[in-house]
Image (spheres, helix red, strand yellow):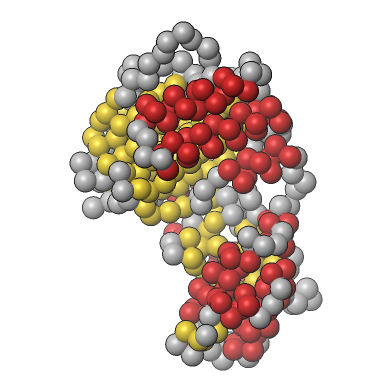
Length: 382
């Protein structure tokens, strides 16, 4: 099937074995452009563009480009990316590969292309995204470093890093510690609102990954069954208790109603969410909370709190790996340090807010992260 005279994603996927789709994309793109073309994707940290397919003599294997949140390119960073690529490669043309509102990578042409590949780049992005469900080819290239089982589980738990859903822009990211903890974030735009969660399991490695996997499964099962926030939290609590491994999970579980501009949330022993106001103020959502999930009680309640969050404001959920990151002076970033970083960053999109915070966490110390640092930013839109 053709799309406006172009080969579409179905043809790209159907004409090749899944692991050969990147090479097929390069073949078709090079023929249409009349010059060599390569496909690049970002690594899992969003810091390097890595060649997925293309002539190894003409195109570098990697390009340092801190322009992503995880493996997704921040749209506002495309001009910066183009400049970095031109500095390294020389005269070239770059087309972002976009699936809906997510920039999944880019096509890069050396020389002067005979035709514009913008439409084809979109179809290539979709074909590669679909093919990734059948092969490890794309996943393997994105992993610049060896990953442990817990880290692989963590990556597979996460939803898309950047999205526009339910009347809001959303961005989330996890910087894994050297011994991966049990952090995760999740969201889903449903008819009853935008569901949100940031969570952190105690412990490290496989046990933390086991707790997180079960917790996110319980939360997703609850919301897909039409349960409310309290029922979802209770199901996750019971699931962790049933593991009987003396582990628990701190979490903020919430939902945002786009029509009423209202956030409702439950805080289960987790760092206090922040609202970044349009006038620069930073307000803590510090109110009634309950204990972490998975701590045994005869009876427990899950108090639901609410507050308006309006266009022009941003909601920030984060794990203690952000505020407890050690700095060069030996102390943690802390709540005040986090506020200072946010003030210095100023008003930004959710994607650039997450990337700016991640950069600040990494620059705080030359030492490896001791704990996962997880962020989720939501910005309501008119």
